[in-house]
Structure formats: C-alpha cells, structure tokens
Image (cartoon, rainbow, N blue to C red; front, side, top):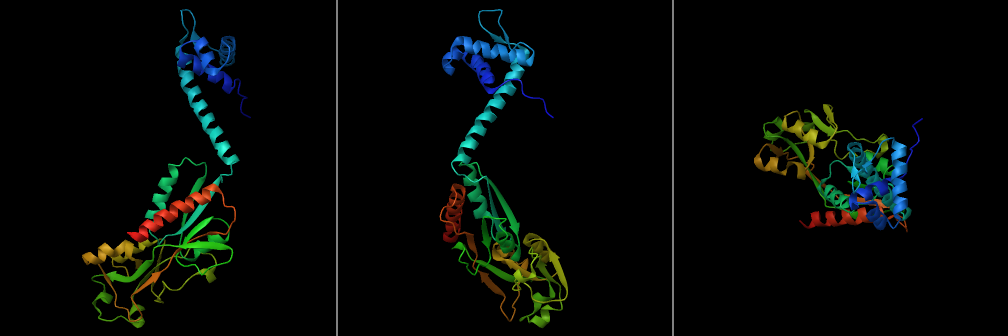
Length: 303
C-alpha cells in the first residue's frame, strides 16, 4: 500500500504563493488569507517534508536549494490538480468520458484527421478512439456497441440510426503495367481466375456481414491486412485487385498501374455514410465531433 500523503494542496498553494509574490504578507493578500495562516501552512509543510523550504535568516524568505527543487514538483502537482478540477467540472456538465469512431480503412482519412485536429484545440475532456476496420468489420464493431459513430462504405439504413452522406469512393480494378492481364484488350472472369487475386481481409467475424463485391473468385488468392499493403503488392507485380482512386490516381497517371478492361465493369463507386445512433439527447462530445466531421466531409466533397 502506498504511503499516505502528509500534506495538502492548500499548503502547496501557500508555498507557491510566497515564492511568486516575494513575501508571506503578499502571498496572504493574493490568496485572501491572513499572513499568519500562510506562515502556518508553509511551516506545517516543512514539518511534513522534513526540511526547510525557505531560508528566513535575512530580511525576506529565500528558497533553500531543497525548497527550489521541491517547488518545481509542487507546481507540477498544482497544475495537474487544476486540470483535474476542470476535467471533473466538464464531466459534471455531461461531457462523455470516451467516444469511439470506427472507420473503414478504404476511406480517405484526411477529413477524420482534420476533424480530430480541430477537436484537440477545443480542450474537451473526452478521450476519442479511432478504430480502423475493414468491410463488414466496421458494421460488426458498431452494431456491437463498441463504437459511437461509424464511417462505412455502405449503409442500407436502420430506424435506430441516423446517417449523413460522405464523398463517394470509386474503386478501380488494377494491375501493374507489365502484368499479363494488362496486355489484354478485354478481360473476362475466366482470364482473372488464372492469376493471383489480392484482397484485403475482412475484419468481421460474422461471415454473413462480408460483402463479395471486392472479390472476383480467383482460386489463387493472397490476403492482406490493409489497402496500402495491397497497393504495394500490386505495384510489386504479385497480382491484380481493386483499389480506391485516392490511393492510386497518381500511379495510374504515371503508368505504373493500369486499369483492367474488365468486361463486367472495371470500376464501381461506393456511397459511404457517416452513421450514429439515434438519440434525442446526444452528449456534447458527440454533437461536436459530428459537427466537425460534417464540416470536413463537406469540404472534401466540395473540393
């Protein structure tokens, strides 16, 4: 068991005030306490720590070397106590202690990061967790009440949830420029199944949640953990696969990657949504993060 603290914040405040204001009398005036009370607080603090904080041999109290070292730690504790008081006050006004946002890893994260940057400048007490999942794993985490908001590739709607549109995400079917599929004037499913297909592993544990739109059925399959790894694998010539345009537009423009002329369609577009639980009285952190995300997502759509 840790040793019980032998002094209190009021003693530390008196100690700090004497040094800041230059005398016990001035410290008392600043703290709205009589001089004798300040002197008693500092003396009892010295008794508690076991050494002199001030040298009182001259006309004014001067910090001892040990007192100066102790004062630095005391001020850090006072600042932390002040912050703790503000934190308690904000929680008492209804701010949520924690908030979780689950994001599909195929989506551009720029708007999310900009919203979080703005949130950090608001000095709110809420701790925000951003979790990246993939495909059905986004819905699974949100439905399991392990997240308060989600940014999902698709959302069919639900009476218990509300949602707002996000910038569409277009997927291209791609291969490296020297891949055998890139030489074909038209690519069929029969052509695709002869080559390695690259897919991002769906993070859902419930197979019924998993969409099949990003899987074309090749028996030669390489699973990757995220779309950046998938992009590197396609650039490395490992195989073919779907990638979002925001990750590859420059590579296609340079000719490093090529769009495959798939006869069933070499491009399609997701209409992602920002989703939250329907609540007539959402907490202040939920309202704020929704507003910031909406601002950034609207700016992204307009750009």
